[in-house]
Image (tube, rainbow, N blue to C red; front, side, top):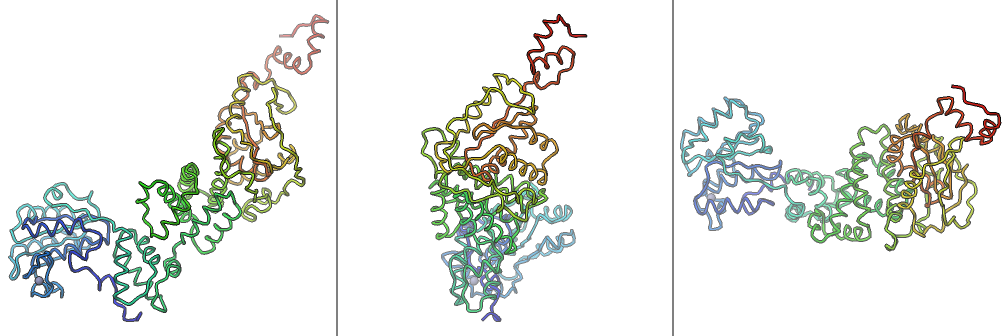
Length: 581
Ligand SMILES: [Zn+2]
């Protein structure tokens, strides 16, 4: 079977308007024009490659020359003219591929023929493919003929790039825009061919081919042929097509989305690893995942479900997964995912880049719960989601050893988490206690209120400042490895204090604060995972400038000393001393 399989694109090229796939808006108009004898003399067929522009042009040429035109305005296929057309022997059709013949001479040769009326039949048809490729001189030579064509001449110009066509040409042609062919139409067409060829097919397989062809029937047909050739038993199966065309099975996206919704980072990493091992590119995976999330998003609303261009079986899967995926998750995931997509090429460690994406996404369900307004029904409780990533497991071998070989904190005391974590009014910077401006403290309170977790995390582990420091340092090293800037390192090395589960970080300026905000999410995810405590919060404040400035004048230095030891002031007064200017 495989040896004498005729290439479907040629064998099943449509020969009537009725059989043109997915362009009924055009074929109907053309048939009406022929029936009412209101045929234009020049047509412009625009549209992507492989959607039937040339085929429709040939059918039009054949139909208007048919000697026994049927009532349904289809060529009879048996008259002399039709037979000549079918054998490519008709003198009434002239085709020029402007992509390879775009000189003035080429177009002149064509125009010369226009002067002679057809010997048999009524019309001479000139089909110019890829007409935007004509040189300017050729265009101008052609324009004259197009302005005053003889009544028997019909021009059909085809192009994939309508915007490159001169307005003078556009205005002289009747324009037809060909659609990308819908997956469903294309799969139907392939199913018909398979039936005629006696090939058994899984509908899924055909839709996969149709999707991969991206609207071009010609590509779909050659992929179909390829898969039939590979088939040993004349059956086209979904999983074989996936392998033959090297397509990433969409099941992976369903699986990984499930894992992400569970907050199961480890399993997501393993799935991603499997995908890479199958030879797929990380970027392709990211783009595919975004497409998947988009499909879940449009499945949310009955109005947009029609935008889902997938098989019926896949559609039910999308609807099912979409129903259990919160909308905020999808919106945030798409936003985070697009950033990953945009920055992918620039990333030095692209695998890690994608893994960071998975890390952020796996943490989303948590964050969304935490930020839910009070009183809102809690999402799947974070407490139920066991933290599955410990320091040792995560990305072993991919990340700098220092970051991930560190042992997880040895002791997890299962005591009740602290119920309150009121801010102290002072925060230590190094050894020197610095009074905190009330304004700054208020601002901190506000931040904190925003991130206060709901009462869900019964299983949070306790940790000490030392454990926090160790994990924090791992993160600093990780950022250093992952293109973190020097100023970011300085910011991360600012001292912090721990109050309950709230980490208070004092920063030098707003620039540092912005820097922190950029990686806050990553940092928080990291700390919460490593320390197995989902209540961890980070609050930051910028030191008031008068506090930050080092004492400079003798008076300032004296004041600073007094702050450390108020007895100095008594000493000064007792001895009647003055600061020496
Ligand atoms: Zn005929």
